[in-house]
Length: 84
Image (cartoon, rainbow, N blue to C red):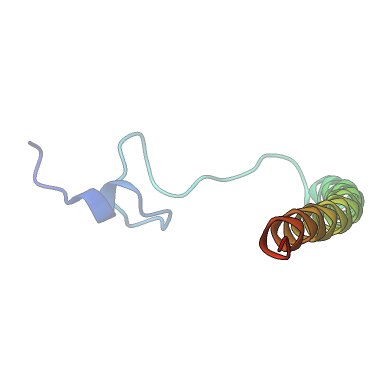
């Protein structure tokens, strides 16, 4: 081994022992990366909104289906135990 720990290999600071250099730097100016970041955050936000709505509707369907299933089992149980 070369004497660096696992944590040092994955350290993003400039003084870290990462293979291939220090911190990862982005080329270009600050303005283009800011607009890319804003676009990325916007797309991510839209994706999370879609995911949240799908998860919510899926949970509602699961809840409704479970309630119907439990009610059916309860009715079947009562029919078999109430026979005289």
